[in-house]
Amino acid sequence: MTFRKKTTRGIGIALSLTLASACAEARPIGDARSAGPLTSAAGGYELQVLVDGVLAPTFFQGGETYVMGALGERYTLRIVNHTARRIEAVASVDGRDVVDGRPADFRDKRGYIVPAWGSVDIDGWRLSRAQVAAFRFSSVAGSYAARTGSAREVGVIGAAIFPERYLPPPRPIAPYSYDRSRDSDRAPPPA
Image 1 (cartoon, rainbow, N blue to C red):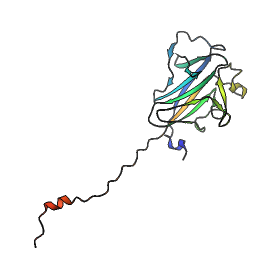
Image 2 (cartoon, rainbow, N blue to C red; image 1 turned 180 degrees about the vertical axis):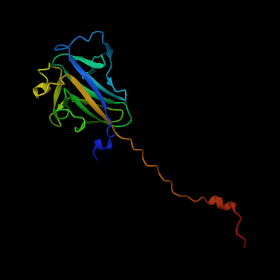
Image 3 (cartoon, rainbow, N blue to C red; image 1 turned 30 degrees about the horizontal axis):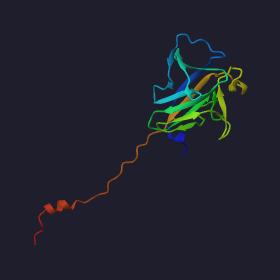
Image 4 (tube, helix red, strand yellow; image 1 turned 135 degrees about the vertical axis):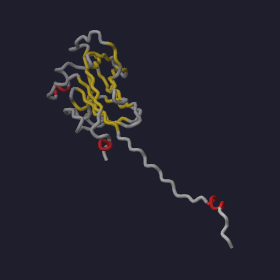
């Protein structure tokens, strides 16, 4: 049975994050206050962007979370699970699935299994089991999505989270036991 079949059907927590390159086409965010990693109000999940192993600065403006990065700088996605159940995280960058680089679709694609109370780092698009194409901040024209045919969602990072369905273990059945001590309270049969 696949993990997706074990997950709760129809329930997914969507997280999204917008990237802005400090050197390319970033617009001033104005009086945006600093925000932390993107979290879900519906669950204990985080989507973090790391640059050189450090959480990238994020900003909140108009209901969106933005992360700033320098043109050409490499980044890593980290999915953090703060719950007691495993999750499947189907992630996308620039509208492309991080596993195969094809158009993202959380319904039919497979994702990363994140252990309970754990995290998974995603370094780039999977080329094989051993190789990845690194995520880098770039201009729209230089993005992986634009080079593969569709730059419609450049700068958007998303993750659909599917928690594993909790099935409580079956209740153990105690074997029947006969209490002989209760028999000693009875009078012996007449002789």
